[in-house]
Amino acid sequence: MQIVRIDRVVSTYTLTYGDTIGFLYTTADGTTWLGQRMPDYMSASDARQVNHVLAATRLSPVEPDAFPATMHYGIPVHAEQFFRVQIPDRALDPLHVRLDVCVAWPQGRTLPDPSF
Image 1 (cartoon, rainbow, N blue to C red):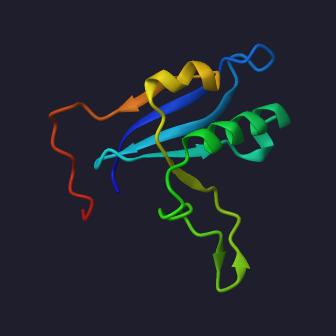
Image 2: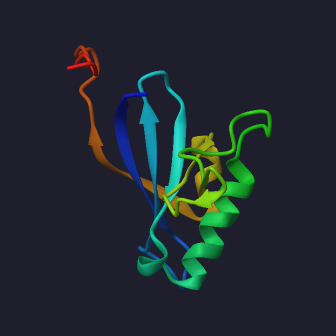
Image 3: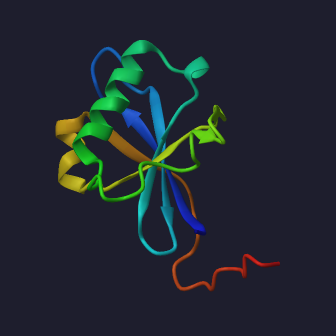
């Protein structure tokens, strides 16, 4: 899964306005994955808001829960998780978030071979 775009998910709620609550990663196949900020860098309000965004935009439970796995041979790995979501443009205002582009691979430009 090659990442072709990273957007910063920014809160537009009054009390947390401008806070980064997570990052949205778009892969070459067009799927989008939401990763929240590390707990050390999030307030309780930010965590509640990113959970609200996840609850509203999370895809079918048939999909993998997240990646990477949270357990390896029964031992927690404490890795940051990324959840597959779909956030339509019309949902940004009701969710009180905006997406700011951090980096994007130029359209039409061939992706590098990941095996190198």
